[in-house]
Length: 486
Image 1 (cartoon, one colour):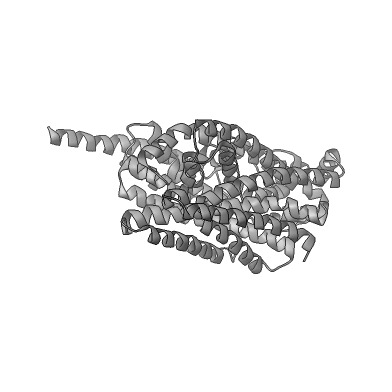
Image 2 (tube, helix red, strand yellow):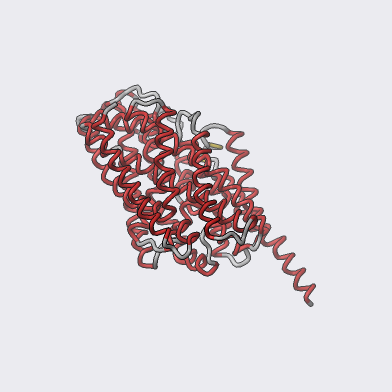
C-alpha cells in the first residue's frame, strides 16, 4: 500500500466531508428543507453552476472508461469523445431561461415536478419516476465500479473492499448535505479535474519521449490507432456522428443535467456558466482521452481498460503527485455519484412519497425519509456493483440513452410547443423506452445498429410519437370537450 499516494487522496476526501458538514448546517437552519435539500434553494452562481454541470457530466466513463476505451481503440474514440464539448452549451441554450422561468412558475423542484405541472397527468409522473429509478441505477452502478477500481489500483486492496470504502465515503457527505453539498463539492471537484488532467497529460507526453515519438510507436504497432476508424477499422464516421445525439444534443433529456438548469440564481449566472462549462468540458475531455491513447506505448498490454488512468499516473508521476492528480478521476466519479443519488432520492421522496403516499408529511418525517432513502439507494447500488463489467463506459452510456429516449421530447416540446399534451408525452416516453431497450438488447453490440448509435432510432421514433399522439388524440379530446361545453 503506497501511503505517499493515499495521503493526498485522504486530504481531498477530508475537504469534501467538511463541505458536506457545512451544507448540513445550512440545511438545519433552512426554512424550506425540500427546496434546499434537493435544489440548493436555486442559489447557484455562474462558476458553481458551470462546474457542477461539468463535474456531474464528467463521470467515471469520462475519466476511467473513456480513456480506457481510447487506449483500446485509438484516436477514433478521441474524435468520438469530443462530440461532448457542446453538452453544457446545448443544455443551457435550449433550456436556459425558459425552463428556469417555467420551473419557478410551477414551483418545480425536480424535473418530474415540471412534467407533472405541464402535462397534468399522474401516468406521466409515474412513468417518469420509474424511468429515472431504473436507468439511473445503471449509471450509479457504473460510478461505484469506477470508484472501486480506482481505489483498488491505488491501494492494492481487493475490489470488494475498495468498493465498500468508496460507497461509505460518498454516502456520508451526500446524505447529510443534500444538493448544496453536491453543488459546492462539484465546484471543488471540477477545479481538481481541470488541473489534474493537464498535469497528467504533460507527464505522459514526457514519459513517452514527446508526441512525435508516441505517434511513431502507435503507427508501428497498428496504423489504424491514429485514424478516425479505430484499432480494428470498424469505427464508421456515421457512428461517430450519431454519437453526437447521445453525448451532445440528447443530454438535454438527462434529469441530472436538466435539474441544474432550474437551480441557478439569475440570467448573468446562466450566461457565465454557458461559457465556462463549454470551455472546461472541451479541455477535460480532450486531455483525458489523449492520455488514454498516449499511455499505450508507455504501458502496453493493460487488460482492463478502466485501470489505464491510475496505472499511468503511478508510472509517470512521483507518488505524492500521483495522489494529487488521481484526485481528479475520484472527483469526477464522486461528483456524478452524488448528483445521481440526490436525483433518484428526490424522485422517490418528492415525486412519489409526497405526491401520492403522504402529501401531508411533516418536516421531521420528510427529513427522516430523505436521509433514509438516500442511504438505502447507496446500499442497493453497492450490491449491484459487486459484479462489474469489463468496460464500465458502456453501462453508463446505456443509462444515458434510456433517459434521453424517455425525456428529451417531453421536456423540450413541453417548453416550446403549445399543442404538446399528456397523450403525446406518454406515447413519446413509452415508444422511446421500449424501442431503446429492445434495440439495445436485440443488437447487443456496444450500442451500434445499421452503422449508427442505437439511441438514434428511439429518439426519432419518440419524436414522431409525441407529435402524432398530441395532434390526433389530444386534439380529438379538445374538440370533444368543446362540443360537450356547447
